[in-house]
Image 1 (cartoon, rainbow, N blue to C red):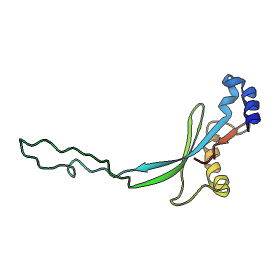
Image 2: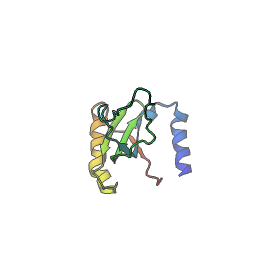
Image 3: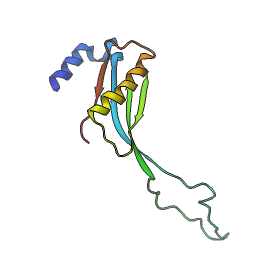
Image 4: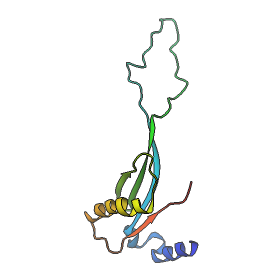
Length: 123
């Protein structure tokens, strides 16, 4: 892996080469979402001489969703949500994920010379 990275650094002249615009980088990430109380729901009655109550705890997240996110040096590319409870497999990646990413890239450039880097290292 180190040798491969050193080859690529040499090829891209340490980031000075225009070839860095040909790289698409991808990563999966969990996003947590909340259902915050409305202003009306969080109102409480307080006597005029009593201090206002303080919120000590942040509420727990309502849920979480995994997204595969792709971007290039020049622009953001695509966000692909994973179906709930599903994991990234080679079949999903090749058939659903990459087709959407490449379709998006084709809108503004040709696909030849494109390099895809996707970090799949465990956390």
